[in-house]
Length: 340
Image (cartoon, rainbow, N blue to C red; front, side, top):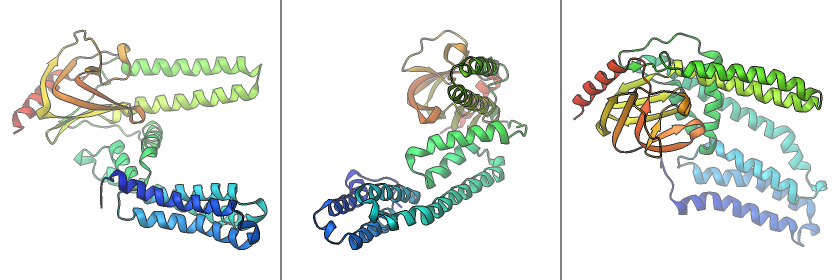
């Protein structure tokens, strides 16, 4: 299976189905359609809903593109059919929307849930091997979902999982390090969460005098933000910093993460000295100046850090907080000496 697609192949895969749809649209709007509307409408509907997705499937079956992306062309076919076909000629299109498409949605949803459940089971059975739920979930969703949707979906699932499902206390292994116990991060997040609750109550009372709907929308958004913040905070307890396989896995819950090859570390400094933060020197924490650091890692070359919803930033120097900073420094130095 090809892991990547070059530009010409990508144009072919997506261009051919789009070209077929364009041709069908031209036929529906041509002078030939009124001469035989019933037969042509049946043919166009069949092509939009069956042939186009089938052609797309045949084009992607030997590529790394998730098969679930077929749904995009199925939905596109329904939308185009609703636009180009006269209302009186949409009988079979409406039948498909009413009876077939809900079954397709149910199948895809069941498939995604099945894959996620398998990922969770695999995660639980491999916890002794330091397999991370968030990482496992991402890898699974990259296999079954369109790439653009993976990070938002994974983030929402992870927020719910860490916030409301995973309550089991996590015992750190020898090569794992916490970063939330000695820092002010958790206190800051709890304070922000408390402020969200207070402001939600106050603004709901004020807005309800003007508009009940506006007050309800604000309350929903605030409660949703509070749930997310709670999940973000709890994920810090479940995703420790990890040294394994000649790599350093740095995490700040599910809010930011980066992987550093030990051979690429130029210097590790146990220090809380002030730094000038810029494109080359960054914090692992997303809280900026509100948070502190006690470890500074300097790299030999530029590396990438991934933030919320897949936002990426480059860095060469990274400041972070580690609760047991001395043991962390010793462990890094020990591991670096073993790197060939």
